[in-house]
Image (cartoon, rainbow, N blue to C red; front, side):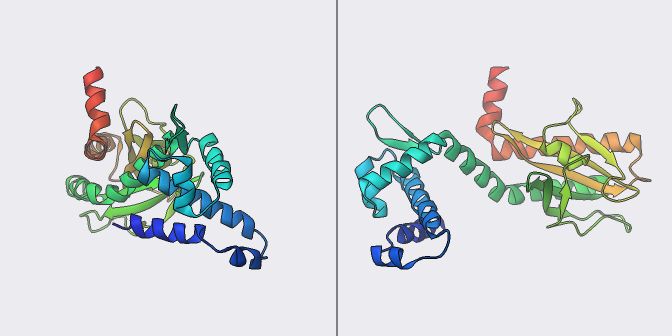
Length: 251
């Protein structure tokens, strides 16, 4: 729904008049214009593929020479590709980023029932997290546990990926059991149990159950871990059904 508006805004930036361009003398203005024009071209290719060079140039108000230079840059980064006839198409990286963005936008909605089931079944607070910056994970949704003493308040908070359960799950460092258990890393006497939401492009996110270590002993951690891993697989199948169908077929 919002995509046309965003594309229009980008295109408007690409249509900046020569007088406005010359008037802008701020440092980095030329680089900013190049980014805006490249994004406008990418938006056009994604919306109109297959599309020719002249169509791309006309769509964003650029000369064919400038459009070709930017498109070659995007092609070198695998954001666009060209077929044998010279027409432009979205590249594999554009598809990958689009799929990840779509997955994350839908992920909270899809994960909410799973989080609720985990909190009821385990009694502990359940979180959904995604990768943030290179060394961090961020929690984007949760369902509070049912115990009177429970973990709460981490939505929007970032945690390090180093030696944390959710970090290991997001980085694909999950043992064969399908879940990771880490004790007293971010908070003393707190145990976290995480499992990845995996698909063919990598790992889209992770589920994480967090609670006091005195309740999450090794035996109970195993039961909770199996539940977390099962719910993570359910979310992955819902978000990326084609991947999981082909995976089953190939076996």
